[in-house]
Image 1: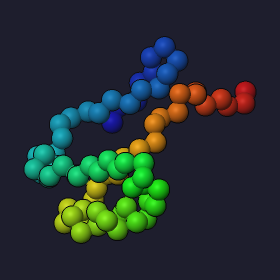
Image 2: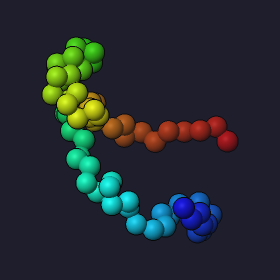
Image 3: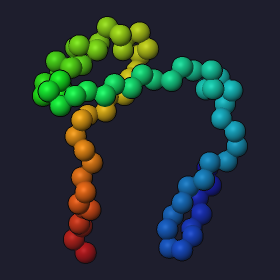
Image 4: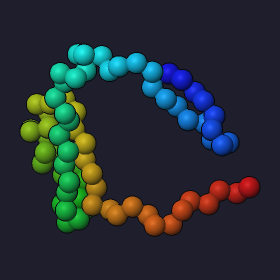
Length: 75
C-alpha cells in the first residue's frame, strides 16, 4: 500500500493486483428492505436468514436516505 500526499490530503493507493483466488469468490448478496419491513431490523434479519446464511455474508441496505446535512466538528 502506498500513502502519498496531494494538496494537503492523504490518499491511499493500492499497489499490485488482486489475488486470483479473490476474483473467484461470489459477490455477497445485497438486501434492500422497505421502510415497513425495517421497522423491526432483527425481524428482517430473521426473515432473510435462511437465504443469506448460504453465503456466509450479506449486505443489508436500510431504507433510510443519507443525511443531506454535513457533519460539523468543533475546531
